[in-house]
Image (cartoon, rainbow, N blue to C red; front, top):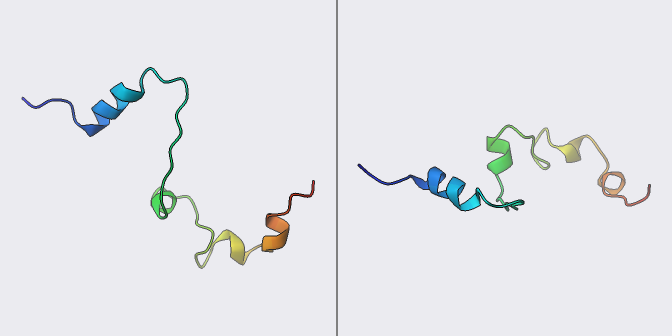
Amino acid sequence: MSGPGPIERAAEALSGASQIMVFTGAGVSTESGIPDFRGPDGLWTSSTPRTSTSTDT
């Protein structure tokens, strides 16, 4: 019988944490079904970047 797998080890390592932060790379969100920003149907094709990134409220 083998020991716990990587998912189980990660769950154990994080189980006592009150907060976690995860940094991911390009492509992870699109593989999860989240639309990208620069693709053919991305956010930048339907909005003006200057308006979208404005800090004016």
